[in-house]
Image 1 (tube, rainbow, N blue to C red):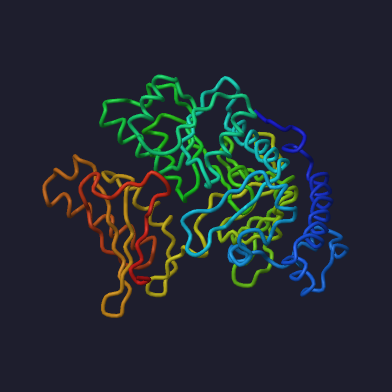
Image 2: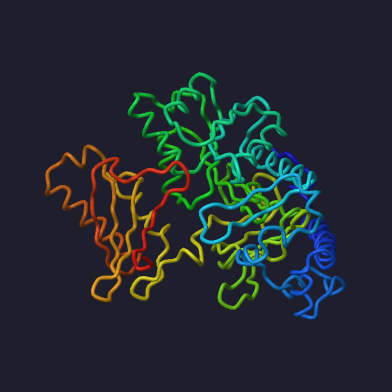
Length: 432
């Protein structure tokens, strides 16, 4: 189902014309209203009149997460603080949080793009959505909530945690749609199995999973254990929250809502724009936000863009699944390693569970990589020789993909700590 047929199927020339008009208006607004942007543009000898085409976007300086912290809390606002009706903030970062304000119009836009997001997964007013993203300063819970209400669906604001209660609600209220982090969906599946509940026998049919990296292998695990269609959702606090991009059932990338968010991919080292299809760092410019417009925000996410029309009928550019981040990449013995690479290998090995911990340390001045990996109860109860063979297999597979050796430690089921928010997959003791 396409929620907004005008903007989601707009011919590319028309879309780019709209993007340019909105970009020019935003540059004009921040130049006049935000001292930080006025100074940044003046240092590049740029003014509102300098933006004559979308190609001129590359001349505009970048915005970083540090810029948000340096201007904490309201230094980047483009409207009087009295016009801000909502404040959200990022969590889990060091130093000052990223604080983002919304006008009433911003909240309306957010609800609208989230309605598009849910509709893209086939959700209608007939659905019951169990929203297990956190409510509060985190944007996930309320973003999903307002989009669901705009769509006309029934929302269960379950938030995160109390998993046995979540399962009771699913059964009693006939939940059809699940929204949460991918790791929490597997915790739900684990608890269901312990309680003798087969989630494939429930009304669940589709899930929207994001807020943390996950692989195609984990998608298969979720779909098999929950008996649902598992779709990728993408968003950032700095841009609007969830509702920036969404995967459709064709699973050929996430559609970016380009009438609101202008996307680029750049070389993370040089900052130069890269052509469609090449992998680099994703950068966003907001085109319609009132309270806190953002020019060329560096997301640190590594992906590529595809402008070809999708079989679903949408013409918006699609971003591929985020392969990693420029700031969570591990450099081990001079080799670049992304946690998502390790996860892909682990989840393809039969007999292991989708719970793991990556531990990086330094022993005798050399980097040391150790992977703790849960195995299934059947494998764990097997003879020692069988465990040793599995450990050797995982070690060989990892070395083949990563190009470096890693120690593998097989641990008993449920021995790795679970979290109900974003899963903590990496412990880098070199930083301690």
